[in-house]
Image (cartoon, rainbow, N blue to C red; front, side, top):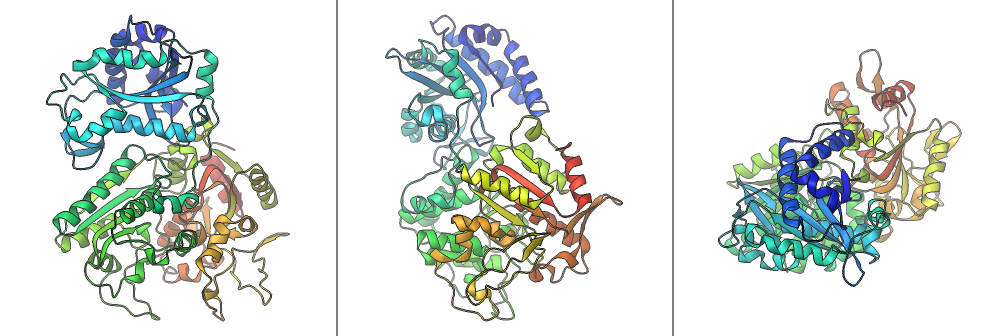
Length: 623
């Protein structure tokens, strides 16, 4: 997706006259069904006008400009890309990031600056990240057919001398991705022109605008590389700022002493788990004593199975007896699953809250969470809980937020729509539907939904079935066969295999490489098993089929979601919620929110309750 493209000889008069801002505004409204911000309109008018003045009359008329191009499988948009051919007849493109800032402060966070006290990515780092992302995820660039470079134009910065944008600590960055300002603006046109002066054909531009995208790199496919020294994901914008900020605070804590608490929030698909793994990998390579912790058995066992380092991947309740500051760095993913206490009737602990055990045990503790993914009553992880405990220990926490969307085809609109459907936000967005951003289908029969998912798997995509916990979960029989608990009419399938340590007659736990959760999420046989919230949370697949049970139904009479705990077979979930129907409905809504946002390319639905289906389709404007 992009807002506008044209040859430079068409662009220049539109930009110098200011008309380009009106064109982009109209395209933006048509595309996103809302008005762009005033700052964005000013940027279009001022930045593009300044750029047009710079390249006017220098012989680049045949090159092409693409404006506001949305990166594949992401909600991030780059400002502009100039497409053309160099003197050696090689196809080239230049990513240009425009900024109206006239000054900044140097940040202690690598590759970041401070604007009015806020940590932001240096414009050159932002442009470089977009370039690297395209080189990795877009067929026009990843196959070597078109060469990419990047730069930034800071048209309100008067002089290089004394400007923090050009501080020596950014020297390596500026060598890779140069910055231009008033002082060196005469170098901008030659930089772009040398690569694109000989123009681009309409077919070459179309190869970029309609090029095929590689499927997004799955988290678990690349954990080993991230841990052992290779960063397989290109982090963009605030993701890179957060990663660099965390690493900076870790190094500062080691150098200066003291404790640190860092809180990172973000919705589904904003990169929390990717950042968590990259932090663990980067810290381990630097020799830090690092632990990755979650409350998810499925995610942790998968990590242990793939990486083969069990001591590095732990559960939140593993630190009741840990000594103070005994762990140099603890990265807590899915921290919304923190519990009030690690104590249970089977495993007594101390008096401290679980968040306290973690903060006390680690010199630096990093918490990544989405407060709308807490699915049990005793899951209490929140920004407020973490920050209040930190302050009670004299630690001033650092906070960061992630917004760029990478799951659900990068569609922020679909995520907002799911949140609206389930009552988390009043704002409904249908851009995902009107602009064909994300595939959503509703099936009358679960057999047909399974067939569609299997067809996508035959084509090379990953696919899984998930469901609300509305059927019992049986132990395997004596010969290891799974009982088909999930029964809908004549269709029957088993849940994912229950781990041995959960059987009625408990056996020894499976090795991580053969753990049932790992098999379900990563092995072909997992397709024939149905996952639930506990096996699906934290994972992503290209296509997901959601069986929406009768435990959460839409009440047509009163117009709200209601929980029917008589339809739930999740004993642990129901415990304590029988007299709190509103809380039960809220937690079930969060469960179906998680299940509905596991897909990278599409989500399919099959409803057991007809009123719920009608409400779903009405909110979707018909399907």
